[in-house]
Amino acid sequence: MNVLGIDPGLTRLGYGCVQQDGRKQIARSAGVIRTSAALSVPERLGEIQAEVRSLIGELQPDVVAIERVLFQVNVRTAMSVGQSSGVVMAEAVSAGCSVVEYSPNEIKLAVAGWGGADKTQMEQMVRTLLRINVPLKPVDAADALAVAICHLAQAPTAAALQRVAEKGGKITS
Image (cartoon, rainbow, N blue to C red; front, side):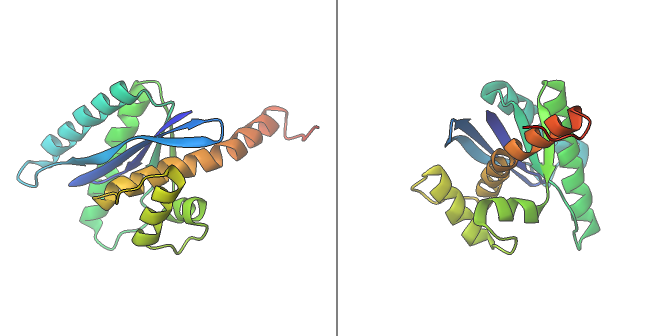
């Protein structure tokens, strides 16, 4: 399975692609898409759309996993993060990818083992899990890889629950 993780944002959108081969997870790509504050919001969203389309075309993910915005003190920031998430979702669906969202706490729990992990702990765990020897900068790239790792950790349980639901909720051995 090939998962493209996204840490959404209008100024900086982190991306990270992780491929799972058996039990081994391999980082294929990570980085940040930046847009200029000098541009209008529609122009910035257009740049994000074009970059994400290119990434999906290049990396061919099966799934695009996105960090869900739960709460922001700054409404303007929350709106722009939501807009960038929407652009990513639309591009992913258009390319035939599945789209899933995870809360920050779900991501931290899956990657670091507890929902209160800070940015430094998360970056260190991502590097450890993916056997990356150099610091991941900017942190948005590490955050996006964490989203992909979270999906790979959650996918077996989600698939099992789907199979149960398809059997009318009956668990069989």
